[in-house]
Length: 510
Ligand code: MV4
Image (tube, rainbow, N blue to C red; front, top):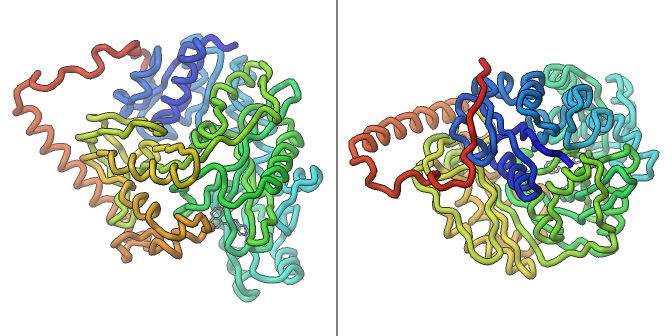
C-alpha cells in the first residue's frame, strides 16, 4: 500500500482524496498555486508545496514540477483527481518512469480511450454497441460519401475530442462541407489533431453512464448507472442514480457492456463508460472517462462502495475484494453541482469572497466542497465550488431531501447555481423523471435565466464576465475596509485553531 500520496489537484476533489487517504492511514501532500495558499485542500493535507502562479498551465499542469514535488516530499503515489493531469497519458507514463504509482490506468489505456476512433474500433471488436458510423478517420470526400450512405442528420466529431468539444450536428447535406471544414479547423487548433469521424445523430438521447472498477487480479465489475442528462452546454448540473426507468434487464446489459469495454483495454482502477440511450432503449457507447468523476458520490450513496479508496487499492495492486453478486442498489441519490455562477446573468462566473457559508446537514445529506466561510473564489479555475448529494429510500424522498438541503444552504458574497437547482427540482418533467439531454434547453429557457441577451453571444458573455470580476473586486475591497475597522477578536477567533493537522507549507516555485 502507498505510504504517502501527492494529490495533484485542488478544491473539493483534492479534499475528497485526502479524506480517503486519512481513513486509510496514508500521508498526504497537497500542491497549491499562488491563489490557493489558503485553499481547503492545503489545510487538510499533512504537507503542502507551492507549485506556481495562478494559471493552471503554470502550476497544476506542470508535470515535471508535480513529479519533482512528489520526489522531494517522499510521496510514493500521485492521485490526479479529475481535470488537470487526470487523463494525460504522458503524465501517467512519466510517473511510471519515475517509479511513482499513478492512481489510474496506464498511459496506453488513456490513449486507447482518448482517441475516439481507436476507442470505437476497440469497442466494435469487443462487441460493445457503438453509435452507427465510421470506425476510422475520414477525408472530407469520404465523410460526404458516408453521410449520404447512412442518411442525415449526422454528427461530425473530432477523434481527439470528447465531452462535446469539436462536435457538429449536420441536418442537411448542403451544410456538411462547411461543418467539416469548421470541425477540422477547431480540432486542429484545440487538439493538434484534425482527424474526424461521422456518426448517425441520435435524437433526444439520454446520457447514462456506468461506473466501473477493475483491479490488477483480473476482477472487473460495475457499480450500476448514473443518469446525467440534465446538462447545460455540456456541463452537468444534476445527476442521479439509479437512472429513471432503467429496467433491471437493460441495467444488466449496459453493465456487461461497460465491463467488456474496460476488459478490452486492460483497465485498472475506477472508470466510467458513457452511453447514449435512445427512445427505444437502445444504447450506444460514446466514450470512457479514465478518471474519478465529479458525480461519483451518488454511486457511493446507492452502493456503499468508497470509489476513491477502491481506486487507491487497485493502483497499489490489491484485489478489490468485491464480487458483482455482492452489489445491490440501495435507494436513490441525486447530486446538485454548486457553481459560483449567476443563473440570472446567463451563468457568468461569480468570483469573490464567500462572506457567509452555512452548508446543510441532517439525514441523507452529503456536502463535498472545497470552500469555507472567508474563502475566495477566483476566476482561474473551474467555477464548481462544491456538490450537494441527497440520498433517499426512493427517488421522491431523495428529491424532497435535496430540496430541503438546498433551502438550508446559505452562501453569501458570491452568486451560486442554487436557485437554478430549485427551479429544476420543481419542474413537472423532472419530477416525472422522463427527461433527456434536451431538458434545460426545452424546459428551462435554455438555462438562460433572465438574461436572454447573453446566451450564445460570446462578446456579451465576455463583457458580463469582466463586469462580474470588477464587481467582485469592489465588494472585496469595501469588505476589507469594513473588516479592518471592526474590533479584532470580536468573533469566534480562528476557526482553524483546533484543526487536527494544520499542514506545513513548504517549497516555492516560480
Ligand atoms: C451525440 C449526440 C447525438 N448523436 N452523438 C455530447 C457530448 C459528447 N460526449 C457526445 N455528445 C453527444 N453526442 C450522436 N451520434 C448527442 C450528444 C449530446 C449530449 C450527450 C450527452 C449529454 C448531453 C448532450 C447534449 C447535447 C448533445
